[in-house]
Length: 382
Image (cartoon, rainbow, N blue to C red; front, side, top):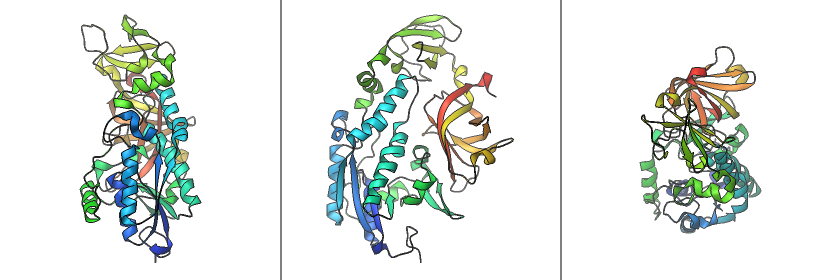
C-alpha cells in the first residue's frame, strides 16, 4: 500500500528533505510530514546576503527567515541545515536577470531560481542525504497519470504557482512532492496554528529577494553600468520626442514617467537595446496575439511536435503571473513554438513566461511553457 507521498513503504522508512524558506507554507509542509511519521530533514538555502540588502520586512531568504526555519525544526524535533548558496545564486540567477534586463527584456528571476538553485542544486543535496523526495511549500499538485507524474494547478486558484514552476522537468517532477496542492492558504495557516508554529500569521514575501527597495535599475547599474547609457525616446512613426537616462528605467506598457510632452497618451511599445532607444506609441500598439517562445519545457503526453502539429493544440495560456489563463492555440512551425492568444494581450514583453494548460476546467493539467522570445505585433501576427 502506498503512503501519502506515493511510496510503497511506511512513512517512517521514507526520508523527505523539505525546502524550508522560513515562511508558513514550507513550515507547515515540514510539520505535516513530521506528524505523519516521515523521516524529515529541513534544508534552508542562504541565497542573498542574509536579506540585509533589502532593508524591508517580508523579503525572502533573509536572516530572519533562516532563524524562523531553524526554530520550527527545533520545536518539532527534526534536523535542519542551512547551506550557503550565495555565489551560486549570484551566477545562476542575479547575473542572468541583470543581463536580460539590460537587453530590454522583462525577466522573471523566480523561475530561474526554481530551475537552477532550488530544483537542481537543492535536489542534489536531497539525494546526497539519501532522501526519497524533495518536498516544497509551493501550491501545486502532482500525481501519477499512465505511469508518469504530471503537474496540475492547485485547489486554491488564488495561490497557483504553476507560472513560476513551468520549467520543472519530467525527471524533477518524479522526485518532487507538493503537499499543499490540495489545501487553501487559510487552511494552511490554521494548520500552522494547530501545530503551534509561531509563524502561523507571518506575512508572505512579496519582493524579489535581491532587489533593494524594489528598484530593479539599482541592481542593473551595479552589475552592468553600460546599460545606463542615455538615448532617444522615439515615436513608432519615427519622430524623436526626447531623451532618456537608460532603457533599464523603462518597461513595456509603461505610461507614466516617460519624461516627454505629447498631445496623446503614449506607452512604451518596445525597447531597442542595440540602439538604446525607447519606442513609444498609442495603447492599441501594445496589443499582441501571437508570441514566439524559446527554451520550451513540455510536460504533456508524447512529443510537443506531435501534440501541436497541423492546426495546433487548443490550450489555456498564461502570460502574466497575476492573470488567469486565456484560450489559445499552440503550434510548432519550422521547429519553433508559437502561441496565439485568442483575445490577445496588451504589453507583453520578451523575457516573460508563457505557460500553457490543458483546455479543461477541473484541476487543470500544466502542459509546460517557455520564455517569450518575441511578442509578434497584432498587425504582423501569423
